[in-house]
Amino acid sequence: MTKGNLSRRQLLKTTAAAGAVGTFFGPWKHNRVYAAASDKPIKIGITSDASGQYANSGASDRRGMHMAIAEYNAKGGVLGRKIESTHIDTETTPATGSRVAERMINREEAGFLIGAVSSGVANAISQVAQKNGVIYFNTNSSSPTESGKNCHRVKFVWDGNGTNFAKAAVKNSIDRFGDQWTLLTNDYVWGHNTAAATRSLLEQYGGTVVDEILVPQGTRDFSSALLNIQQAGPDVVAAAIGGDDQKAMRQQVAQLGMGDSPAWINNQQDWPDVYGLPLDNLFGVFGTTWYYKLALPGVDDFVKRYQAMYPDTKMRVPGNVFYNGYMAMSNMLAAIERAGTTNNIAVIKELEGHKMSAKDRMQHDDAWIDPATHQVQQTIYLATANTGSEDKDDMFKILNNVSPQDVSDTNAGGSCQLESYDDTPTFDA
Image (cartoon, rainbow, N blue to C red; front, side):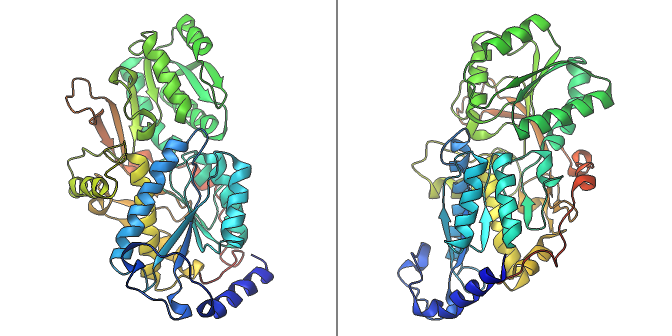
């Protein structure tokens, strides 16, 4: 952030009491009055997709964030200040992500940014955030580069990445299905880097990539790619296809009766991409970070709170994208509380290396934020379709859980070069 921007922030702080505070939400809407500058709400900019390939996941991401904010505001906010958020559609487009981040920081005066599904969009947002020193939580994009070469001091990555999911799935799948693999890859940063992680692990475990088929974003006709797969006859197809593209792919694979042979490995399966689809569309083995039927403390109550807050949503149970959005927002606010200040450097230091219990995370293993890469290291689950279920919402059958120690991305630390604290602009939000 320039000295001019810092001065503008300080000027706004000293004059906040004289101006309008903004729209109030939650329990303080009617019974809380802000009378001093210290009572100014903490402003968080939500940078998620409402249109484009990941619009459905963006909506789920926001619901998770909003529930966390509502719960904190119901308890009195953070440091005696109400939490207020604003959202602008990032349109699944990196250029739009950059413009949204600039506007959030310089016009909306957001002190923190959160949200993303597309890794390209997340990278664009994080560059603007680092330039201005604004803490940014990447909630749901999972290219290994987000905590690797595109890491930043202000950015924290909350989803598992392509390497984590590939490590959980590749060796087991070679042993079970065979060593001749075709890669089916969305032709953008997440797809490329996820496929690269799979390729590297295949080489390590003795598998062979017989072909890689690149699929442009926005593809709705997979007939050519599927014909090539039929003709090649690989043992396994490893698909790194996301969002609405994945829905189209799954429907067409099922229509052609290709769901059982070859075997399919989908690196990661986001809940909004498959919720409501027929179970024969949910073929293969896939990764996730969380499931609403995990027999763990807190899960049932979490589901009930979701249903109470969103009684009219078509998605009647929360999935991994909602979970990541909720956990990221909750931990952002908790870090501010632990720091006792909204100073960005103080909050960053509270986050680096922070440990989170399995109970608090509603996962099987304790999690932590890697201080060298700022990625959350967490349990990875492998799942398949829960065929025969009488509950239409209970679509996943969890096959196993893999500890964060066993799936950690050891390559990211070497390629990640976090900016120094001194080179990161500092301010109080």
